[in-house]
Amino acid sequence: MIASLLAATLLAAAPVSPLNVVKNGNAAVQKAANAPGANVQSLATVVESFVDFEELAKRALGEKAWAGLTAAQRKDFTETMTGLLRASYAQKAIGQAKADVKYGKESVQGTEATVDTELTVKTDQVPVNYRLYKASPKADWRIYDVITDEVSLVDTYSGQFKKILSTKGFDGLLTTLKSKRAQLEKENAGTSAASVKESAAGGSGAAPQVK
Image (tube, rainbow, N blue to C red; front, top):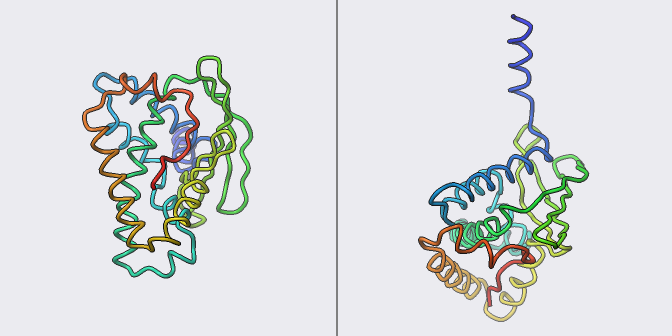
């Protein structure tokens, strides 16, 4: 009995692998999306438990631009992008909730990892790869990027950010992001999971335009 209790304790304490983070995340999304009364807001809360939107936002902005911001600017940017990403990512997750997921290989290099999957939505097969990181060697794995059909969420936002920064500066970028966030949240307010499944399913998963 002591041996079995010890084994259970060790299993409970064992770190969750990147592959299992993705598997558990997909299972949680499918369960939440198919629950009675599911909507974009409820999905966003589930998604935020395994996707690090703050890290995604920081990497999309880039180290040089991030380093040039004040603490207040970083806070404002992170909060704005997190709100925007929660809304857009959750809507896409709803659309793919009933997809058949085939899990591929897991690659780990230090505190960075990649997990390959393939989604089958209706008759379409779409490769979806997840990038994960650890804030420290003992931290949990968190998703910070999703590459759908070779389109990276981080890279897509990064390209958009660079264009806006070059013409409008950081204040212009922040204003644009706040406007896009407000628009998405207004569209998603009270929106049920059922009403967006058909339109979102099988989409590219690319970041929304933040022009």
